[in-house]
Length: 295
Image (cartoon, rainbow, N blue to C red; front, side):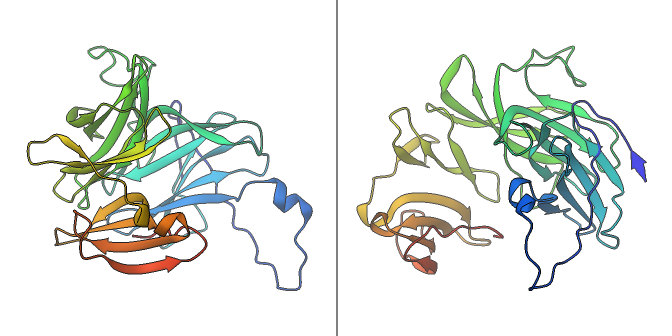
């Protein structure tokens, strides 16, 4: 088993919990602690699984990587400093991951991202600090520190060692910028930006940003569609399809998946044209939201 320390990444052990029978009563303590593992992610080749690990002590968290053929013993344990945890992570290749650094308020407090993004190999080697205000990483001597928040926005459908990262600068809170980042060299290429802070992006399989969406400074939900000139055109609000949330482009098609709240009640998951036409409902609920988990 390989143990590696990578600041601020460290190793984490995943414990196998025994199953309880239907007749067993759940102890009260189970409602006052985190699940032992969360956020499983399969490597592109399907041979390994990464998970966020949460120790029962409430302060120790980290990232564990398992071979699919042995889910009892992790091949790599990446333990984080007390009360820090992986806010999110993504495989950029079969052998490298990116991790967004997070913190948690106390043993069962709320977790939040710090805005820093790091990378590490599957064996815990070659850690790198890709985005954040600290002077770490292989490019720290030639690149200024990042004064802002960075978040993992996704990765190409076919892994190529890159991922998408969106940022909002501390000195320019009214702008969201999207980058294509090489997780190994840490080089970045700006893909687009939009003059509203904290916006997310829907990126097609070819790496072209198609939609940007989020909440503006008036706390209004807004969606923008990329126009033919590379600018952003606001999508008109539709009372019959509120909270329009672009999800992903349909593979091999110009159509897309999206989420709505019909008339502001319940939720629908649909396939549609980019302009909103020819909607086909895939799933719906008359009371609650319908998510795209697993897509």
